[in-house]
Amino acid sequence: MNEIIVPIDITGEEKDILAIFSKRQFMLIFPTVVVSLIFLFWGNIPFINALLDFIIRFFVFIIAVSSSICLAYIKLDKYEQYLSEYLITQIKFRRGQKTFF
Image 1 (cartoon, rainbow, N blue to C red):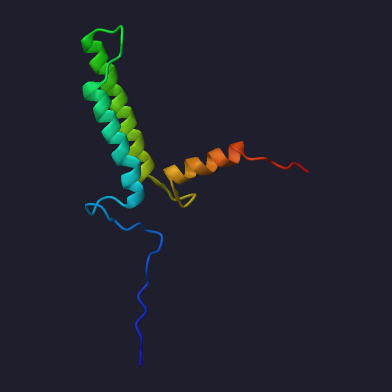
Image 2 (image 1 turned 180 degrees about the horizontal axis):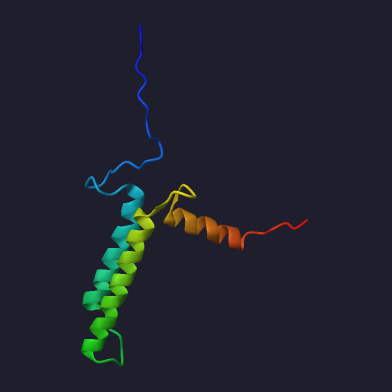
């Protein structure tokens, strides 16, 4: 009997949550969005007037959410890693003990 071998891409992530997030992406984005929204609507920066306070909180929200989306979705083909994995690898390398000959 002739068997048909179907190639499987094991490097891709399955989209488990709402068909747009993998578990890794969801755990990077969802907590950041929730905490940032709470800070945006109910946070308070003391000693600053209300308009400037809201503008600063809005920029913090935009920076936090955009950085978490970048960490979740950007894949570096040169290193075959997502940006979050690459940053963890770089931090471990920088903090790790090096042996010089």
